[in-house]
Amino acid sequence: MESVKRVLIIRFSSIGDILLTTPFIRQTRIAFYNAKIDFVVKKKFFELIQYNPHLNTIFTFDDQAGLKGLLALRKKIKARNYDYILDLHNNIRSRILTFNLPAKIYRMKKNKFKRALLVYFKINLFREVIPVPEKYLNVGRPLGIKDDSQGLELFWKDRNVKTLRFKLKNDFLHGKMIAIAPGAGFQTKQWPIEYFRKLIQLIEDEGHYKIILLGNAVEAESFRPLVTSERVLNLAGKLSLLETAYVLNKAKFVVSNDSGVMHMAAAVRTPVLAIFGSTVKEFGFFPYRAKSIVMENNNLWCRPCSHVGRKRCPLFHFKCMKSIPPQMVFNQLKNWM
Image (cartoon, helix red, strand yellow):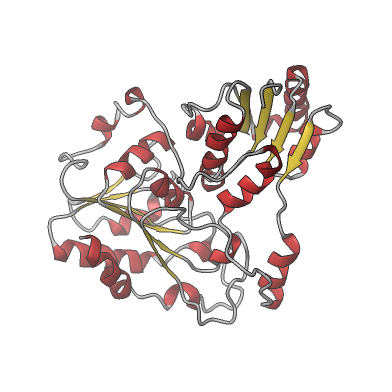
């Protein structure tokens, strides 16, 4: 559309959700080749799209700024006089940000009713599993934004990963290296740490694999029992998002929970085995168009107990994760070893 001058895309968070917007960003550029395409994201996730070549300006929002910061950002957006605003978050913040703006606004539909029926009453009205990137693309279909059948994207520059050599030892990025991300945003999305320890032992017994543990600073201490030998390196809390992406790119494969790292692995085209507990694929979050294995127990009536995760199992047995033994996971990984 030659007449379109400016387009704004909104998705504040989180790691996985932002990476899942990248097919939409790519196809928005194709649909509006000559337009200025801008993006709004939380400051702490800026890296994920910092070098995306399809974007012009990236606006960041800091959680600490509160309503005052949101209104200041709205003032900047209003001054840009956008033709279209594509709201892929559709929450109270994005509503405030776009309130009474002259742009034509398209928002993502969240299917909250269907999600609630599945979580609380185990009534599944999802006739098909639609990946989140395709839900995003549906927002732009009226504007000619189409699916190109490609996957996620994540870009970085050499200068972003130069410091990695000071954080690694024994040439960990070369040879047979496996990345493992034992953490997740909620406890019910985390495979038990003792299961990860047993899996690491099985991998070490198989051959001379080096293992890098990935996660955030809060998780670093809980990963210490997983460092069973000098071939296991705990980098939790020591890497930036782009450094993490680089490590994932160099890995032979990745083992992860249903987390942001799972989506990062998909974005850098590294095979990923993902372990699902309280969440299910019907919500649309799983490795998108990537070489992947999803391990889950589909024989539990209590799954899903949440669409995002919980602090603890509401029934106190945590069978969704405990019923997936390390040997079963290892057997699946053998094809990649």
